[in-house]
Image 1 (cartoon, rainbow, N blue to C red):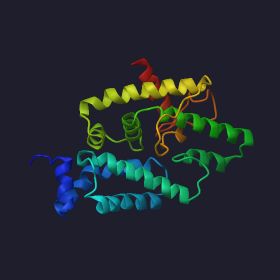
Image 2: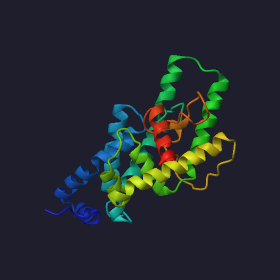
Image 3: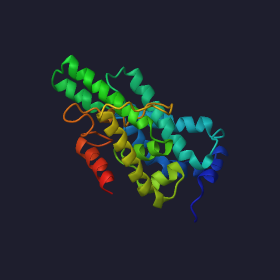
Image 4: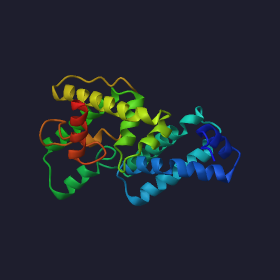
Length: 233
């Protein structure tokens, strides 16, 4: 049986077809979960956000402007709902920065270190803000924990599977250049208005050069390796 297009699947959901809903969850369930888990919230909160994301689709199934990009829509909703939960929990750090919380719980930081961490996080956010919406989407999904597969990214962002790798590499290069500019003290303009990206807080490592040991979705070594490989390719 041929794979249904996203628009066809969404139309079936709008008609109340259980088969279409089952297929929708099977196609995008891992993607939604990857986005939610990338925010490093508790298991209970993560499960709540996952269910709420699907509830939002039920509520808006006939209002999706671009049905072929329903995966992108779900990822955006999952991100926004995650931000709302974290805001209500009055977290002390930016989205996804659970490692900072772990560090603070294990030892005391000076006010200067806390201020420096916040500044680096802001610099990282500005760097991410300079990326295109496509770049932010690709990096958010590719570097989530666990990472979305190229097939999932392709489906969510309505691009060919073969283009995901090259686009990811170009986006990492752009992010690396923007972070280097921030390291050099250059002002990185925030040219795009959107919800704060969970990648940003991951760059707030206080040791070494300002962003050289950046964390993007994985550990510090993972992000450094990603950026380094992008620069060499």
